Amino acid sequence: MTSRNIELFVPAITPFAADLSVDTGRFVAHAQALMDAGAHGLAPFGTTSEANSLSLEERMAALDALIESGIDPNQLIPGTGCCAAADTIALSAHATARGCRGVLMLPPFFYKGVSDEGVFDAYAQIIDAVGKELRVYLYHIPQMSGVPITLPLIEMLINRFGGQIAGLKDSSGDWENTAAVIAAFPQIDTYSASESLIPENVSAGGAGCISASSNVNPKTIRALIDGLGGPDQEALHGQVSAVRRVFEGLPLIPAIKAAVAKQHGDAGLARVRPPLTEVGEAHAAAIDEAVRIAGPQGG
Image (cartoon, rainbow, N blue to C red; front, side, top):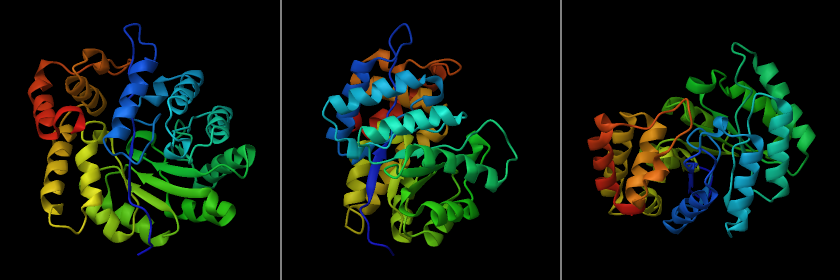
């Protein structure tokens, strides 16, 4: 097993004001709370952040706000993958210039049935344009993107770009795929998208997790990472798995935002942009249960 730091990166939610503009104040406050609760870093502007409902300008301004609030850019892996290469280049170049640890990059996701060679060309175009300072964390979420990050594609990218391919987030929900990536490419950091898989991920040589529900439960997830192999591992794993199970039965992003809103006593944090809709009374009891297990503000 490769020796590496085991980390929790939180894909922070994006709060919206009443007019559905990005609420920068709430965004920064939530980010700071996550870091204070023990997150090793943040992975904003991915699926949980509703990134594909944000403009390039909104994403860059929000990233700037995080850094200007005092969060170390080396603790940030913002999502930058878009359908248009020029958009991905702009976001990735901005994040790199600001000193971010790397970028979490979806493949172009509109066209389906594309070849590994085509996806390789898309990534290569971005990396060549941004330059040698760019570090890419590949984002495998085929149930949403329709474009998988296959093992042959990863091998092609590493062969061409070496250490610029820094890692992968596997949001497929398929542990066998995650394990295969870790085994084939121990030199990159492979993150699971569920905190329930942290023991398996770490045992196999992975790097930890980037999990939507860590917006709600960061303190205990961090405690699980710190307590792996210790006497409290089973209890901590049971708690984080219980919270995760609640959200797996709900509309994930609206439910996460509703739970964060309840933890902070701020109903505004529950707002989502269309086409998502806020959770209703039918899910209120489940949200209450997740918050009860996690505790206030993730504690």
